[in-house]
Picture 1 (cartoon, helix red, strand yellow):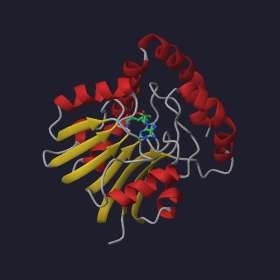
Picture 2 (picture 1 turned 90 degrees about the vertical axis):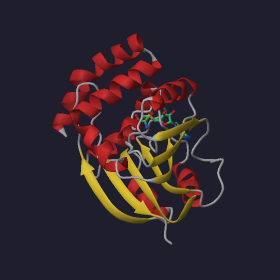
Picture 3 (picture 1 turned 120 degrees about the vertical axis):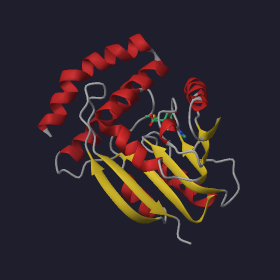
Picture 4 (picture 1 turned 180 degrees about the vertical axis):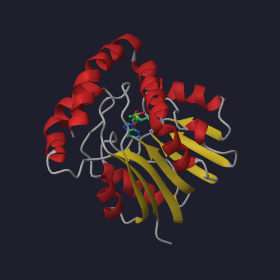
Length: 225
Ligand SMILES: C[S@@+](CC[C@H](N)C(=O)[O-])C[C@H]1O[C@@H](n2cnc3c(N)ncnc32)[C@H](O)[C@@H]1O
């Protein structure tokens, strides 16, 4: 936990300054490329690289995950923020997969039941207004046996770090500008929504570009058939 606090205090102020200089979209792109260079790229590739069929990505941001889909992926990406959505559309043009970006929110998806083979998110369940409503929608629009692939940061299980995340979350929400919560219990939310969890990987990424080093989980789950 000492290393996490060091990174936050040492590099956080510079990143806050950069946020003002770069603006919304370029700042998000800088965070995403900093994370990718620090090991996130491999996690993104393992999350979506093998996917085929009808895929729904929620909260695509600037489209940072798009380059990691393979050629047999037919992706519909939802992004509620207008500026991010334009950035996602630009990123989609150079992707190998076929990607269509539309407005919307995870809590109310404009699709019929069982319309998708896979739903995926990266760092978006921390930002949606309601994880239970969003996960219920994921379950509705996935076909039976459909897959859930999530790359999310979560509340720490450490006896002190978890309560500290609870304490600082209100301040964190005010400074991050994308509605990100640092203390969501996403693994528990996925189980609670009725998905069957197949695997959970734990990761930590230490990069100067994104000095809030929360624990990451790669969660793979299925909708019971
Ligand atoms: C931290 S960014 C992650 C962006 C991208 N997935 C990535 O990996 O770089 C969180 C994203 O969730 C989006 N978001 C916020 N509320 C949402 C909601 N209710 N439904 C879907 N996306 C949402 C934000 O607009 C933002 O693009």
